[in-house]
Length: 212
Image 1: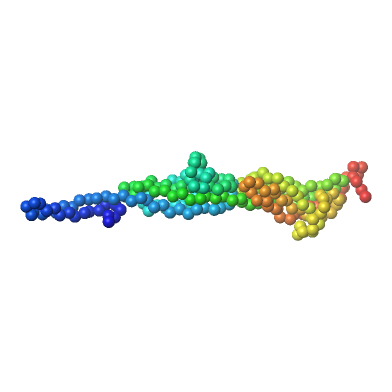
Image 2 (image 1 turned 90 degrees about the vertical axis):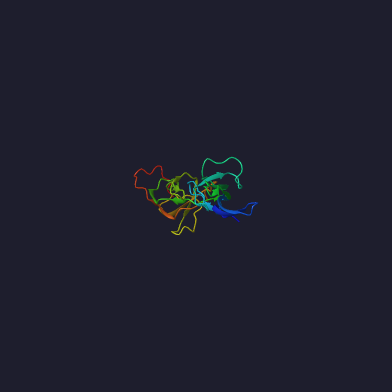
């Protein structure tokens, strides 16, 4: 069997008169490049998710093509995907003098990530109406800002385990947590438990206050 690459083969030719002559010929055999690439299963970050790094027996460069299907069929995507989904990626080597270009297709899965929810403590004076928490903010796992929808739960204890039935309005020290609504890319998540303080109103004009 010929090895991949350049091989020297010795031939001995015998003529009809019995004379022999030796020849050395060079034979080049190309192999099919073997690509090693493992499937990827990771969570959404807010950034493009590239494939795991592939290697080729030839040691040549590799290009990656992504698909919205799981078997590298259909129209290729314009680049690595960002959003949650079941994708696939094909790694193709460039080949060289010893190897024909090779390829391998593997699945490329992105599942939901978890945002970081931030909520700052609030201190306000009583108005006679419910005092709502400061607006929560969120960041994707990659640290970029993301707009989400929140619900706020108010508590009477600093571990945020005893919930109030409604948003507080009377003077006192309360606590609050913000919880985001899940999206197609992000799980629901909650902020830490922060203080929510309502002080007595110092305005001398109390006509608008509801005092019991």
